[in-house]
Length: 396
Image 1 (spheres, rainbow, N blue to C red):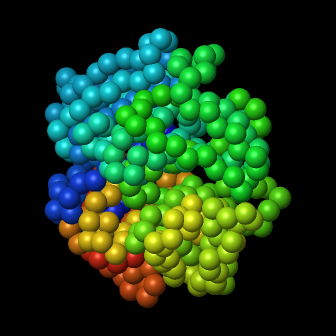
Image 2 (cartoon, rainbow, N blue to C red):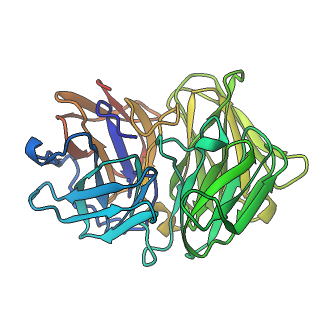
């Protein structure tokens, strides 16, 4: 999650723990192709800290996986003193604050997840939870402890998936899950899922027996879906929720990339559609009005596609979202991305090395939109407007 060498893209009305929060289409503080420098003087960076850059419309929550953890947030335009600072002790779970909308630098002294744009005021959002490694899924339940955030907004739903098979566990009253309370889940196989309404929740979830899980906070759309890639399989699998009239987008990074969409709400799961895409093409499935066709599993050729739930028939679905873009391997840091966007929104690209060239093309036609040059800790709004765009960088 803290890789210092790789380009990162925050797109759409777009974001770090990977949340999303609704902000209006004309709220982008940067014009198209405008660059901002987020660098911080070295003397203000503490030794041994983990650091990053982010945009937020206001709320920031830091979940510390290994407390104690010191949190320092700086405004790059006026870095000293910090705009906010705090700590997470052994007996607490998180540090939460609100800042003016804008771009910030953050440093923490222990493994932590950073959730931006989500609080009890900014209620309608959608995002997958991430664990201490920066991944949405790990190989053992012991590594699958999630710090949860629900807001009781819009859909007020949370989904648990177990791609590898049966899993059971609970939400917890304490930071190390010695005392169970709240919600309990028991998934029988990889086709099963658990859904509940968490309300205004800040808590911990941990599998107790069985396999690791993925967790989706589903108060609204606006997220990329992390894949599950089994070593022995030639396919990638994506599990998600798609509401009525919302767009599920399958972005292809290779020729002759096959895909299939099935509903997980029937026994056995039922195929909805399937097909083949060429490099740069996007297939968009519009969410069904049938309630039993909303929890979906998408299968693609392994490592050749990304999947997002962004956009929709309703105008608000095309402007109210914010999410980190994932590449074809499920990483939010890389050199090749495809995403939808809209006029007035933004695609923020952060350079993590000097002399980085960023190229933006129409994903379907390959028509060049812009070539941009950014350095380490520089951020550009590379959004051409309405469309589906492919963003490539020449450096990791």
